[in-house]
Image (cartoon, rainbow, N blue to C red; front, side):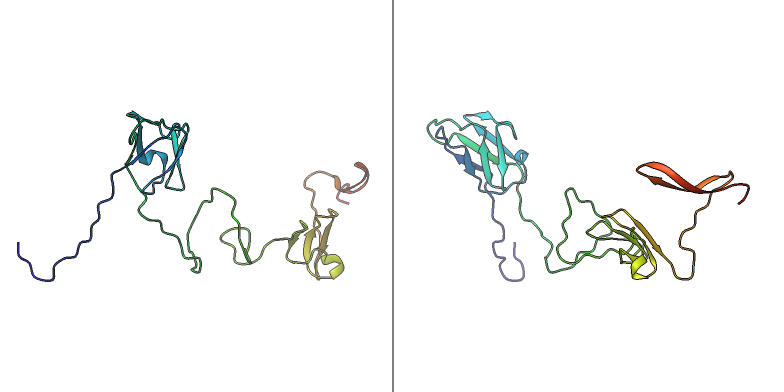
Length: 204
């Protein structure tokens, strides 16, 4: 049928539907001609017997076919591999480009190289609410683990000596309230035994 324009160039190449190998009784690994993504992406026949994927053989690195037991050394090509699915190409995100996502799930540990900053403790925070340093000091309203001696505002719980420090400018540093009944408000102890307390009695 006539058409207008230049003759179309050949653009299509037929991929092989199958690959044949010859077993020698000792070799277990063979290289496929097409990359596949899973053991089930190929159908393998040895001496006319269909092999069970992931049991009789496995595929690694996309093109390495490894048998559990070496195929026999029958004369001629006795191993047939039929490609059911194949890996055509893969796409990777450029390492120099930023990646934006609204959500994500990591199946393994997440490793961050370089500086990492997280403001707040949830995805709606817009300021630093809590700081935990490498010595396991927890700080609120400050990045100093000793606000008491540094004379700055903030609360810290020291990880090393398990002490708590509160420093406040012009306001009460610690507020403790006991509701309803009289009794202890603050208890002091020595070696796990109570030695004293501050409490309330008849409103005093």
